[in-house]
Image (cartoon, rainbow, N blue to C red; front, side, top):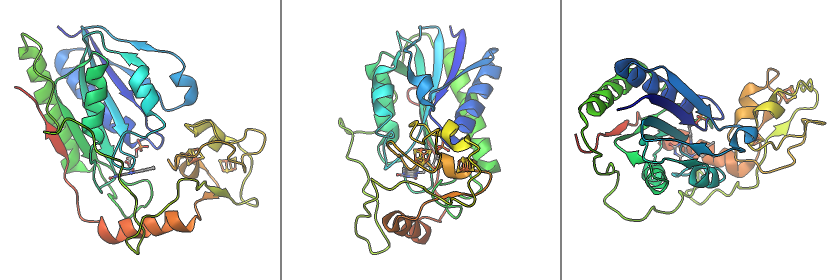
Length: 276
Ligand SMILES: Cc1cc2nc3c(=O)[nH]c(=O)nc-3n(C[C@H](O)[C@H](O)[C@H](O)COP(=O)(O)O)c2cc1C
Ligand code: SF4
Ligand code: SF4
C-alpha cells in the first residue's frame, strides 16, 4: 500500500528534475496521489537527513557524470536518506554518450540504505557540455516511453503482494570505475581543475550564478571568482542572462569536440522492470 510518492533528485541544469517529476507525476496519477518533491541540488538542501517509510514510493534521479553518480554527491546519496523499507525506483539521466554503471550504482546505494528497488531506468537528455549532443531529448518518443514505464510501474505496485527481489541492473557484483573523458586525439582529457571563466564586461553582478551553483563555489562578493570546487555542471553558464560565463579550458574543449565527433547518433533509453 503506497501513500506517498516522492520525486527526489540532484539536477543542476534541470534535465533530471523534469524527467523524475514527469515519471513520478504519472505514477502518482495512476495511484491517486500527488507527488512530493525533494530537490537536493543546492548545498543548503543537503543539510538534513531524509527518513522514508514503507508506505512511500521514492523515484530517485541523478544525472550521469563520468558514467557514475556525480562523485561529490555520492556522500549525500550514501548517508542522506534512510529507506526504512520504502519502495524505490532509481533513474539515471545521461547525455547521449552512456550511463555506464551509474544506474547500477544508484540501485546499490538505495538497497544499502534499506530501500526496495522495484524497477529502474536510464533516460537520455541533452548533454550539458554541447547543444549538438542529445539535442531536443527527451523528445515526444522519449516522453511516450517514460509514460509507458510509469504506467507499468503503477500496475506493478497495485498488483504487488510482497516485496520483489531488487531490480537487476547488472550481472556483476561490483560497480566499475569512472569513465575517463577523452580528447579529440583519443588521449585522456584532464580537466578536473577547470572552472568557468567570466567576461568582466558582460557580468552585471546580478548574483544568479551564485544562487544556482550546487557546490556553493561562486563568490557572493564577486561572482567573477569561483572560489571552491567546480563539478563542471554548467548551471552558472546556462543561468547567466548576459552570457558572461564560459569554459575555455583546452582539455575540456577537446573532450567536448570528441563527444561532438562520436556521440551524435541517437542513444536509446534503457528500462528495467525487475520481477513483474
Ligand atoms: C561533469 C559531467 C559529466 C558528464 N558525464 C556524462 C557521461 O559520462 N555520459 C553521458 O552520457 N552524459 C554525461 N554528462 C551529461 C549529463 O548526464 C546530462 O547532460 C544531464 O542531463 C545533466 O543533468 P541535469 O540537467 O539534471 O543537471 C555529464 C555532464 C557533466 C556536467
Ligand atoms: S549570472 Fe552572469 S551576470 Fe549575473 S553575476 Fe553571474 S556571471 Fe555575472
Ligand atoms: S562553478 Fe562549476 S559547479 Fe558551480 S555552477 Fe558553475 S559549473 Fe557548476
